[in-house]
Amino acid sequence: MSTTGQAAARTRVIPAQRTPAGAPETDDVRRLAATAKLASTVAAADDATRRRLRAAIHAIAHPIVFSVVTRKVEIRRSHRACLRGIRHLRPACLDAFQDDVDAVIDHLLAGRTAIDDLDAWLAHWAPRAAVDAHRRRRGARGALQRPRMTKALAAGLGHDRWLIDLALQILTWVGIPANAGRSLWPLDEWAQRRGLLTGDYRNSHPGVVEAEVALVLEVMRRRPQWYDNHVERPLGCKDAPLAPPPGDNATDPRPLRAAEPDELDDAHAGSLASLALTAIEERLRRGLSPEAAVLPVLSALFVEGSGADLIDRAPGAGRAGDDRLVALLADRLAARGLAEQVVEIVREGRHELIECAPALGDQVREVAGPGAGVSRLS
Image (cartoon, rainbow, N blue to C red; front, side):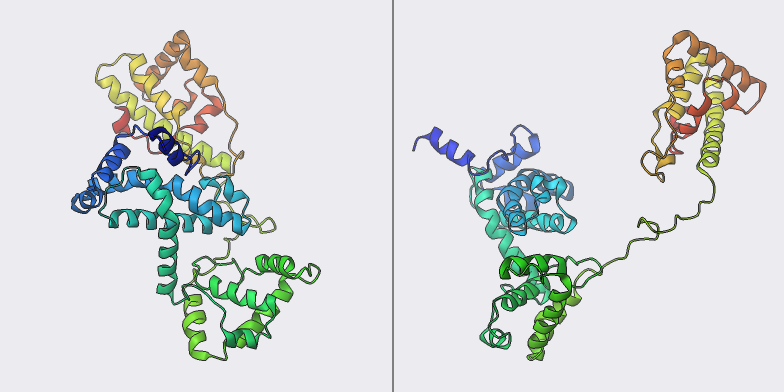
């Protein structure tokens, strides 16, 4: 095969997922991998350089791992939403994906051979590295690395095809860190699997599967030591399911507020008005013109904004925007008049900045959060 054909073949290994070249960090990684110096360089580097190189390796590896590992797993699980991309992965699937990426990176850094085409190498080794790391994690939790049906367990289950499959699902599930929400077992998923395997869709519902799980566990307990080591122990290592906080469900009562949103907006606007006065006074003492002393302060406090004061509001629950102040500051003559009015207020010693011009109106209640300090404006 020609050099061009070989390159094309390597490109097809991971379609539409090859990492674009050109970034200095990823170029360094590829160069070090080609000279068999990547692992030794990372091992000998200081913390900052090690983090930079590992981040560059992650940037190259994670789309490849998603293509050759994660997509296949999600297809087997029938997680169609997860197939759309990394951002659409379920929390448990995202955790597994990150574990797989870390496993592939560790496998890469454990080698000492030269790698001419890093993308193709990662695509080839990613499935094996992910499987090996998954089995090691299961073994560390006490779960069977490769759950298999024994003759004794199959006989205890009457060689029932569905019960044997359910037993393997149980042995697989206990070694996964994820939980099933408020339930100990993913009964809804297993009920769907039962319907597909047996064809008995009418009786394939969580209640029936829960009774069958109890039956399988009863048979497993006939070997107490084996059951404790490979079922109870890994099951106890699972993340504890957390109940949602009060107010999250549609029927939950709404939490009581210390003050109404309008009152909070007024208080926030007043505090920023005081901050603006302090900053403007300091800028005037430095000899700045009224426009230079006032307009940057108003823009920083009342226009740019960080939204920190609205972070506890539901989407769409904040006050509607008012572009009057933005338009006022964009009009040179109007902005100059506003600056002169504010300077007059400051020199008279009054402290009601929000009354200096009607154009501020409701806009002053949508100002930036308290992070804009005097040091930034003076």
